[in-house]
Image (cartoon, rainbow, N blue to C red; front, side, top):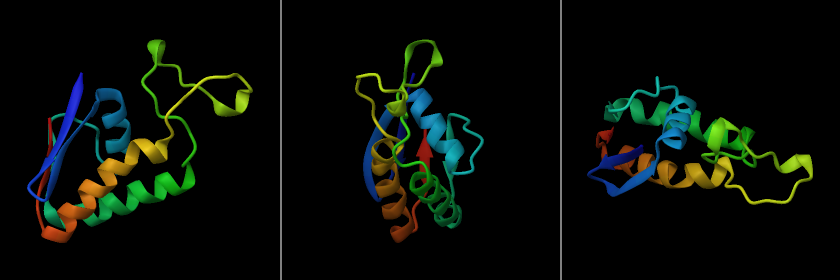
Length: 107
């Protein structure tokens, strides 16, 4: 499943479904798809997401078979995408929507 975030203030962003749901939950949302944020709710959601990224910036947030996540501290070689990198496009979208007072929707 893919989830696309939309707002009039920024380009659409498409993510893997499990990554998008994880980010939605970090924003304090239920993780339901489809969904939306009203303009007045965006600053709080953005603040929660930024706080989670600051606290867990280097933790992996990759879709993986079987629901397992790679662990960069286990000493095994491999590549992963950190929470900070996965969240950056969504943070930029939310920032633009908050600045313009626009809704954010996803499906």
